Structure formats: structure tokens, C-alpha cells
Length: 497
Image 1 (tube, rainbow, N blue to C red):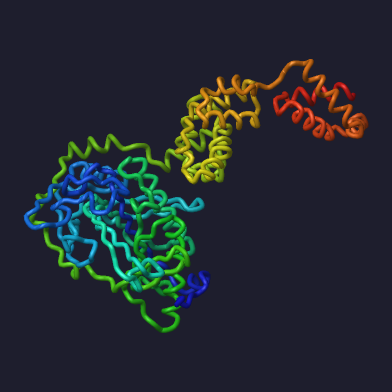
Image 2: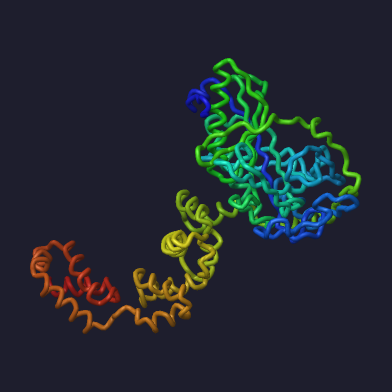
């Protein structure tokens, strides 16, 4: 049953939204958080498990040092304070895909706290304050079989895969985000997008939302306009795309307003996001911290990173992705729209490397967001997964710049690169793609085009020079696109002047 909704503008006329975002980042460590099991995605179910990650009696966990390092680097990149001493806790609750019946996490003593990230939305900067970034382990994965929706309701039976159980997670929790108003959905999306870029730059996770290696929980509440009291929140779980983060905030704002306008009260609960219909549905009543009966994990020693180590890790941080984009945009002369499209296509690194190999910024962008993006879309892969290197793209453009080929012929050179026919220069020679610059051949082709199109030739003689385009097209067709179009135009005008 679809919820009653209030129009978005009407929501804003009556209420102020408050958001909180909890982003779970699955780290790319080779082994799990507390054992040596591998973390490879897509392995056969229940083949990457051991007594420790299954929680069998007598199994003793050991903290993954690389996961701790990644947590500290994430915290530093988010301007957090790094705890001098922290420890793990047991978060107790039952769920079928959690083999120990508790999750080893951090509660009131996280490794990173009090940070922030500045997010730009249409030129307005919002500071998103980070409450904490803490270490924990992931749960397994349940698959519900036999139902129409893929959820437990109506399913015949459920299957559980524990391969994911125990994989290291960093949960990044914001403080309430206030004052965003109509831009609340956009701020949520921009924050998660910027956070994902930062995680990728740090190389601590592949941050694939489609594979669940980064996923967001969206907390939302509404307060009467001008009130300093936060409303009751709901938590929409495991939203796995940037667009859905934005849509989930917008939907929950409209749904909350409808409940409140009708005299009802918001139930503090988890909600499920439905990608296909763009709605949320009720999950379970939301537990408060005391319901989880947190207590210190007795099988793990505290984590106390030395200040020297923290400063060493600070020195490994890459350039902030937002600062880098701003620097490159200014250097390349791209418009805001061109830069957004470049980042959205995942081609920023490829274009930077193509420019470093000798191409101009606009030429590099032309190929990566044009011909190569088209091929990637046809193949259903990312543009950087095509197998074409920036050096090769720069070499193709060098041939264009040198007059050996034009853009149309360059596409045939890319065909040769995909087919493994050699370097761009070798492909041009083997396929006979070089532009014809022989004056005799060009003149002969121009004469033939003029003779075959006397009416067009007469227009040009009468001063209608735009008509020359038709004759240029005829010459290019006759010469398989290998004529120098500029020289062809000159010859046509010379002969008909």
C-alpha cells in the first residue's frame, strides 16, 4: 500500500528537515576483521568461513592491523581526532545472518571522532559534522527465496551466506545535518558522493555501491518550522546508489509530513528502500543503544595507536578529491558542467593521464567522454575497463594533430586498438588510413565532384559559399574520408571562383 504524501514544497512551508547519515564502508583488506579468512567478492557461498567468523565456541579473534590503519587514514581525511586508546564492544541482537548473535563493533570509544566534511551544493557550502568513524565487522547475507519481492515476507525459505560475515567495516556517522531546507536531498547525495570519492582516493575500498561495499543508512526527522526540538527519526537502511539517497530523503520528508499533518506520530523504526517503486516500507521498530546491551569485548585487547604512527599515516593522505577537482578544472579550463560530466563518467584519472601524455584537455575529454564512453556503454563496463590506455589515446590524438588522420579515421584506429592490431601508427599504416594530401589526387576528386553536381557548382559561382559543404562531402565520400577537408574546400573555391 502506497503511503499518503505531501508535496515537497508544502513540506518545506511547514517543517524543517534534520538528517543523519550512516555510511558503511567495506574495507579492501585481504582478510577479515578478526580472522584470516579471505574477503574476495562473489565466491561460492559459505566457502570463506572459519570457526572465528562463525563464532564457534573457543575461537579467539585477533584485530586486523591493516583495517586499523585504514580506519585511521579515513578519520584523518575527515578531519577527525584519533583516539589514543579505544576498544571493541559486543552489540547484542539476533538476526539469522549474524552467526555469533552479536556484532563486534565500537560503541562509546570509537577510534575516530569529531570530524567534518565541507560539501558544495550549487555553490553553497554545507559543513557536515562527523560524530565518529568506528570499526566493526559486517554480517552475512540472507537470500529470501520464493516470494515476489525478494524480502522475507511471502518467501518459502531463506538461505544464508556467511562469506561476508566478519569483513572489516568502517561506519561513518554524521551529527544531525540542520539548515539544509529544500537542498536536504541534494546535500545528502553530495555528501555520500564526496565521501565515496575520498574513500576511493585513499584506496581503502573499491566503494562499489552496486556491490554493497559502500552503503548508506538515511536517518530523517521533521520539526515544526522554527522549533529547536528534533522530531522522531526513521532510518532507511542500506540505500545503495547516490540517486536513491536523494530520493529516499525526499520521500521520507513527504511521508513524515503526511503523518504529522494527519495528527499522527512518527514511529521510530527502520525502513526498507524499494529502488523499483521509489518508496520506503516499514522494517522493524528501531532499537536504542541500551537495547543492544553493549559491553566491552572481553576477547580483544584495546587499540592504542601511537602518535608517531598516526602522524606517519597523515603523511600518506592523498590530495583531497574536491581540492584536486577544483585545481584540475581551473588548469584545464573546463566549465562546471564539463567537469561534472567528467567526474560522473569516472574518467578524471584517465583524462589527467592522457593530458600528461601530450594531449590537450579538450581533446582528451572528447575521446574519453565521447567515443570511448559510447563503447563502454555498449559493453556494459566502466570506461576505464575498456583496455585502452591514456598513452594510446594521446597517441591517436597526436596523429590527428599532425594531420595524418582526422577524427572520423581516428575511430577506425580505435577499432584497431580494441582488436589488438598494434600501435596507432601501425594501425594507420596497416589499414591505409592516412589522409590523402597528394594535390593531384585531391584535384581529380574535386573535378569529379564539380562535374557530377553542376547545380551546386553554380551556386558557389554565384557567391553562395556555404554550398561548398555538399561538394566537400562528395569528395570525402569518394576518398573514404581520407581527404584533407580544409584543402578540399580551398581547391573547390579556387576552381569555381
